[in-house]
Length: 441
Image (cartoon, rainbow, N blue to C red; front, side, top):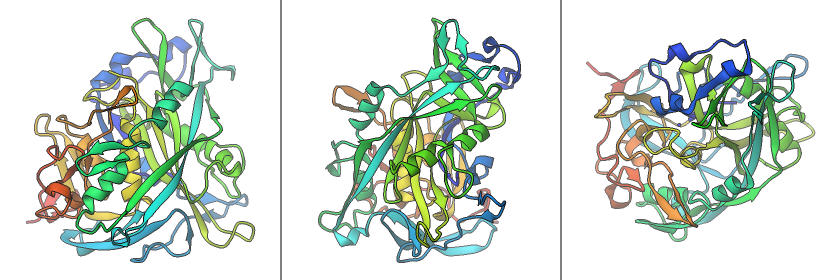
């Protein structure tokens, strides 16, 4: 479901819908699509091969000088980096790297402290509501049949997010706790000592606004012809979302939040949208529902010499029945938070793996610790219903670290490869795969 080195943009790929790729000119009416358009797609994440995967890591100084994040992974954590608490380790498994070279040792970095420490880490978790305006040819907010094309996460939605299992405790087979904390306690069950937890402390921050220029958006209407969602060109969105230059200014959503100190390098930040999806190039590559990444800012004499990493995610709240397979409400957020916990800097490589749906035959092939992806392509039990605080939520079932590390048997709680539903993913991917998941001769 990454400046974007994100993986894990939670997205959907359209199959056979090229005829719906409407022209970028014409009236507001020409930008309208029915919500049935979304019911014909298969939810999955953006992949490392997607153009969006590496967008945003590279920046430019005002004089045009190119800068980028180049800090190397270290087994004791990431030195010389101003960011959230993290720890590093490695696992051993036979495989091949991106270039087809044999590799057996795979380092990784995860949030918090090592599970053997028995320590609890609490991360401040800012939630920044973001309103999106779709602009007409004259630069004002476009209107369709008397309805301004503005899509905002209402206070009701933000309240529902705060009260969701991402931020509030619920009862799992591992015990009571927040969704991603309990998933982590499951996957490192053989190492956990004492009160090892990784908690999120949500705090709602100042709302921000994005205005999407004419020609770079479409919108969706319900059965009553009411506008209910938006599709936005990814590159346009990225330019308005991420600071493109250093030093940061207030011209972008993330930049404004950073300068206001609404988000810091020590936080796990969420930029919450309502029914806003992204497409890459045209509608044949719609719709990204969320992604996780970090905003990289270089250190200087004013803000310290260490590079700064603001770990964050873009997640869209989903209404019921927009997408197939039960994707709704916090599905994107739970997915992205899981991947943030397990791969905060989007650089944890693993042996190549594939996950193929037994019914549709479609799936994915990847080589990174993006823990949401191996299940979101499955049609059987991709989400897990959690009833709490007067609502039923739908976090995604998550593949556990143990599946990527090729543990057999799994050392996770109950010997599982997935959480919370331990029956969703029960077998490892074929092993020792070459790049592109080609079996070794």
